[in-house]
Amino acid sequence: MAGERLAQGLKGLADERVDHRFKALPPDAEGLTVGELAAERRNLFDGGFTTPVLALSAESVEHNLALMETYADRHGLAFAPHGKTCMAPQLFARQLEHGAWGITAAVPHQVRVYRAYGIQKIFLANEVVDPAALRWLAAELADDPGFQLICYVDSLRGIELMDRTLREAGATRPVDVVVELCAGEGARTGVRTETECLELADAIAGVDTLRLVGVAGYEGEVPEATPERVTAYLRRLVALAEAFDKAGRFADLDQIVVSAGGSAWFDAVAEVFADLPTLSAPVLKLLRSGAYVSHDDAHYRRLTPFNRVPEEGALHPAFRLWAQVVSRPTTEQAFLNAGKRDAAYDLDLPQAQVVRSGRDGTERPADGLTVTKLSDQHAWVDTERAGDVEVGDWVALGLSHPCTIFDKWQLIPLVEQDGTVTDFIRTFF
Image (cartoon, rainbow, N blue to C red; front, side, top):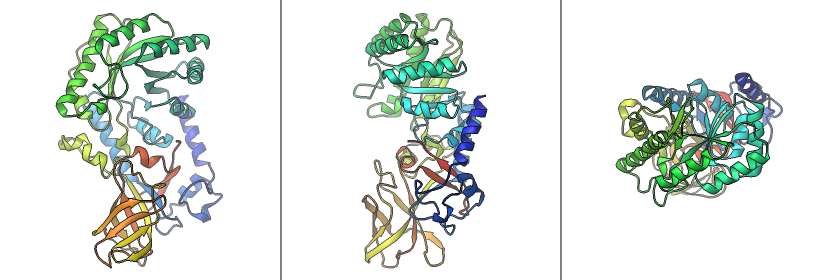
């Protein structure tokens, strides 16, 4: 049933009409469905696409999906990739096909998107205290016995608010929760001390609207992170699960959840979780890394754990933003027609990688080109030589931080190495 719902939802995306809402698509495709346009297998460079245009490499996406599936299997990890990165049901479907347990969300709106496409297992990595969201969640759980959701708690007040709203809503199923352990002094959310965590477990045991199923945290927030600091935090998380189990807080569970894992330290998660002791029920060791699908050319390329364990493989950057030179006012400067509205810039500026000649389509490395600044609709480029680029040339930009790349594009061409567009990835932000 859930699979049918997802398949039907994806068909609905393919049946959506192409129009002015979607940047960069060919003007002459107006009125076609997305599926019809994909079936034409147009070329990104001469098929009528306008610049700037964001392209997602079909080969790199497939490689990354397969690599993380293999990695999780090898290390005995379940996988709930964070969907906030892409907010793309087509990619969720691919992740599930590649063995994902479910999909992680950050806020209730994202859960609503996932449920619209039939996602049956959702890990909500946040505490939910919004009454409207809790009422909706209670109804969703009541309507679908097969729907499984796990969310954070990190405060007594949060437990009080959740319990009151769920009782008033007449919730028929308890909401499964995990206690979030803070990653350290000065870190983000989560309970600061183990003593407070035990107080929360006691409070959860005192209500029938919530069910404690495990512990969770985010090692990416460890202050001044080093392998030693991250490992120490993860060992605290495992010890907390042991303490809860010893205190009888996981009685009558079929499965205990222990979850962590962003995209920078999943090797440490794998190592520490491998040493999890036997508890009173089988443990779901749940990894939540999300940026791997597209990877990137700067931030995660620097941080990826595969740099530390190269024998396990390597992720491939999948994004390229193609822009055109629209102004060449001096021999030292050029301007591209892509800016903050098109490219992520919160962590790193785009990197010029390839120049495609506007005259004959030949490609060459973008040597001597440096993006120095972004305006809303322009990239400022310093050039070393007068002949580096000319007006009309296409320039491929490597990007940093997938979470703020995807959210600028509603429909992204999936492109094979030869430039053939095989599909379009729809996002919901």
